[in-house]
Image (cartoon, rainbow, N blue to C red; front, side):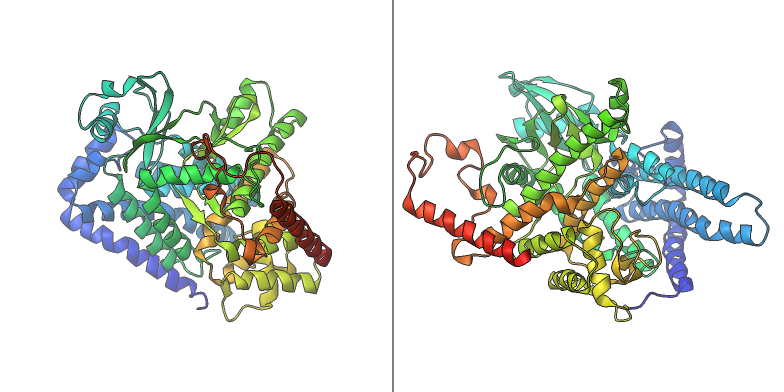
Amino acid sequence: APAAPAISSRTQVGTAALTPCVIFLTVGRRQLRRLRARRRKSKVGVANAATQQELPPLLFRLRRSLRFYSAVIPVLGQYVVQPWLQSIGLDNRSKADLIHDMDEWGSKELQSALLELGGFYVKTGQVLSTRVDLFSEPYTRRLRLLQDSLPPVPADEIRAVVAKELCGGGSLSELLREFDPEPLGTASIAQVHRAVLNDGREVAIKVLRPGCEPTLRGDVANLKVFALALRGRLPVDYYPVFCELERALDGELDFLSEAQSALKVAASVGHDAQGRQVEPPLVVPLPLPGLATRRVLVMDFIKGTPLSKLESRAKELGIELGSPAGKMFGRKILEALSTAYGNMIFSSGFIHGDPHPGNIFVLGGGRVALIDCGQVCQLFRRQRLLVAEAICASANYDGSRGMIKTLADVVRSFGVTFFEDTKDEDAAAASVALYLFGESGVDFPGGYAREEFKENSPLRKLATFPQELVLLGRSSVLIKGVAARLGVTWSVAKKWEPLARDAIAALCNEEDCPMPAWSLPTANAVYTSGQDLKQDGRLRFGDAAKGCAKLVRRWGIEKAAG
């Protein structure tokens, strides 16, 4: 449907904010006084389990909704009201000063609200903090603090959860020699502590935050209402995005599922598009067999610096990120991320879907680690072929009408649709592909803008955007955002094009379609201990024939493309 008039969107938002306000003021005055007393003791973390227990579930959710709207609406509204006041002579500040003051005030308000609310709002802020190419410096700087600044759950509560889940309510000494009370990291869903097993192995223990599930599900529901209310006023329809993140939340709240996902991600990173085992470009910490439940996960310990703290760590080492040495270091990080995600997409289609800077660690020697496999995405054969075609076309985009048509056909084949009033739909569809995979400075066809928040952004023309592309898009957008933050020129399409061509060659033959990387005998050492099939060192005629056939297919594909 076409965008709703501005007054309609404002009315919907106002009504959504007013309704919980009236109910809350009518029914919850006593609870409000108690919450104010608690807030005076602590400026952050009011959305923790203790506060949740003080209010009935409905009132608790309404209170969070009211806090969210009371922060977001003024932040968005100032960008309409303040320029209007300036235009009629009631504000004498220069345009630059006005923008600076609005960004400073708005970023403080948004950071304060998201940090206070916690939950899924923090995850949204984490994504925004990576987009230095779209948001002003005050917003990305302050939202970056959300990566690791959440108030922790007390260590005694965490120890009790671990003891119940892994020791049947007994003593932690049955398994652990040490348990650090200070968490390594705190997030909206879980927090992680270092520990040492009784056999001396150093591990990280991830524990689900007690009572977090109702809060998180309520937050997603509220964001979906917000996205519906502002449909047509935001640069893209975020409702399907939040629907996909809601579905992914199920996996994040189940650490048994995450343990299996970590094994799949590690296997995918360590194989190329043709199923060959390669040196993993980054480290994926693995779960320890038998030490995982729905609420507790014991895994390899990773010692490093999260990407969210890279600037301060680099300064400690005497490295400026914008210097030649800093850019060389940045390219090493980007190379690892690009290769890892390329392998994930094309070796199995199993993709780590939550690549914010708090989940990317820089280890000693410049190696990179990717943690937290709770949010993942599976692309199947046809989808992987479409992604491969889109990447190859984006890498060789020349602005010609034929290339625009090629990109547009691929995007539509993936299930992307546009509003009926979209002018030059081919150009809009091609621009979406270039937004995801194209060069950072490429000119979009049809006069469409590269920036999401401009009126002529192709994202404003989207009617439906398949959920599989939501998490896939986060990986390419993350890599572009990291490159911009590190001041490095980087092309996702150029890095993924060779892998995409290999994938097309491997996947086009349905009679000899390769197994997903995570199902291969070489996926994990546990599958290859003692007996590898067909690994006696002899060259078999059948294997050689299959290899020659793959080379011929790839030669034919490249000849047709070139």
